[in-house]
Image (tube, rainbow, N blue to C red; front, side):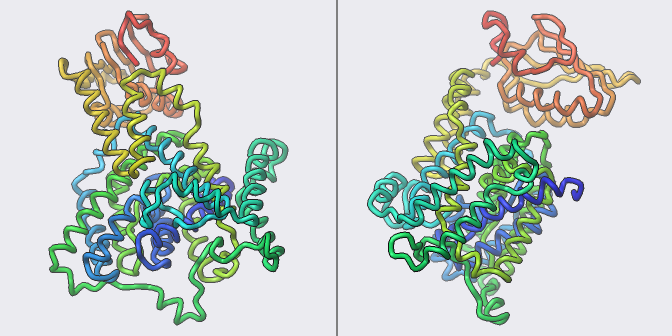
Length: 530
């Protein structure tokens, strides 16, 4: 892990600045103590980051659980009673991992995963615009369309026009300009600009601007528009911020219902994020999903025991990590230590960071997740990919994350069933080993995303120095998810000295440069491969 510290350390700084306001904002939106969000961020980084098999995933408190937490705190009679449910939820996640329930993660359609990433990117942009201009009525980390104060995403945007804070707006605009300049121009000029990340520079600019203008009536930034980390007076008051579960309510059936709900939702969010993160990872690492559930369960047990919110792997922090060049799990672990050290040693300095500066950082993250070109690409892939993709986006933007994913999955399943109900789909392996590691993989007539788990398992299990023949002569429909799996495997096959022969009606191709390009060029009159 330490071999990649030159990549992971700068990335961890960016993740830290992304995580800080989200930890606080999600705690506020959940009706929990602010410090509980920081605890979850610290445990998610250090503990879950250490135990997880994901190289680039980052864990912490999740916006998707905020509504559940807010309701549960009230129904269970207080935060300490809710912490019992968090601990029990972690135990249930451990059971999920032992039962190998992580395989569910392989069965999310590619179109839904891409829709989730794009939807989250759009909602980040829409939610951060008010903070960017100094209108901070909604807590950071709230991703639901309808707000607790009766407002919604678009009414907040309209209200922003009435309540622009000049100081926040100007430092936000400057920060966004610096971030764009840093990435598009300066990082290509000298290595120093790659080592020192743009987000760190704009945070320094924000702190300096706050101190220079704090006495100005026009340009000064009020405390309500700054980061708000709890500031303890001494060691005793710092320790007093920790809460502990009230295990006397463990026999209450409602506690167990909340625990199972937290475990189920947190596990699904984590598996979705794992699938999305692996797809974003330029190195195409495959995260062991059952190990991830065990890591998340352990993290939730510890978080619940010391007063933290429930933890999941989270796509905003994970994508920021990947975009910033994070290579190994060290970036997630270091960001956890940054959170821990900063809340102990420099909380007052953190409280000088304008929220508009952090909003500028998140706007860049959001744009990279929701690039306009992806819409055209998904549309060109055909209606079977486009409809689940766009339904997922609309659900996330106009309801919330879980509803969007649920609607996208439902539509995706209907689309697949409409296409594949007439034919069975299977994976058949021939001549697995004849002493030369020559393996023939014959794909069925219909290969859909339901076959992802089996195909990934077979490809990952191939020994080094294998000669793999993939036969698609009889394949009438090959889902885009499977094509992407083959594309990712081809990248890793070179490292493992695996030669690939693709046999199709168009002929035989040795070690194709791109499976995606190969199948996109196939005439429509041949196979309906898309």
